[in-house]
Length: 306
Picture 1 (cartoon, rainbow, N blue to C red):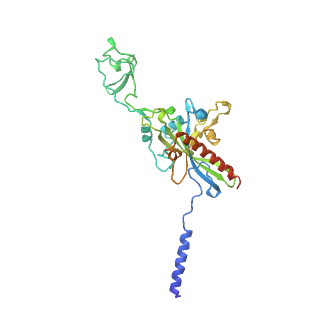
Picture 2 (cartoon, rainbow, N blue to C red):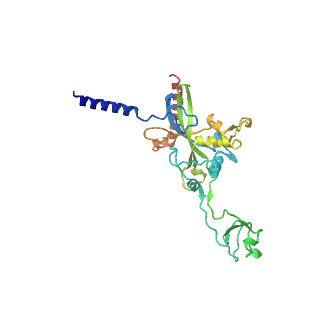
Picture 3 (cartoon, one colour):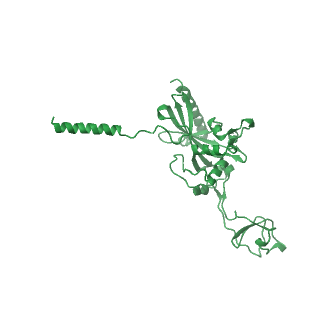
């Protein structure tokens, strides 16, 4: 073998080894986790999607009247406190605040007709008077006809909501989707539920004009926890049995004080349980969700044997 050939082989082997060791390292920590568990400590991991109906009796602690979880989230979005809004639970594609509001429209706004001095009006009728919106405070008939809105505060009230769309409120957004990683930490010999994101859903049975369940916005759970901490007096899980044991939303999620049905467990085909059983009777879908829950519980039990 010539010297030149030997040098060529040596250079190729050296370059190959350098390329091997120059490969980018796999990130050990999930940036979307509140308390990330490094990959080298994970014996088992699977992602689970759950639907949580907030107006169910078991979940009413998150949906107490005037103190709904969705109300706190909407206020944080409107104030700009929650600035990172996402299209879906991949947490990669942003969604604008304007698009979020557009998806929440219950009824499109219609411009009011111009006020006519010869017309009769009924209570709550809207009119436009010189570019200013007004609404009648009572029926306007007989001698009251022709009285200009700006000169008749007993008949007309300025109302800036006239002509604007009607948006869904917190009570309409009665469903969320929780996406979490189920991780068994082999060092601590314990199973952890690492919530990644929460999606606000406008259910069909709450007046969604588009039909079906509509995803309004997805948020990083880590960002939501910061909102909970910033508003300790509002982020309260209501204990219907003993209000001395009310908890913060952060504690309630950590203690898993919610009931959710499994929508999907990650799989190669990315199929939901409903999709798999779409051609089967509905009761089989219900059984499949319960079976999946039992299977995950059994997996946790079996991991203790390692």
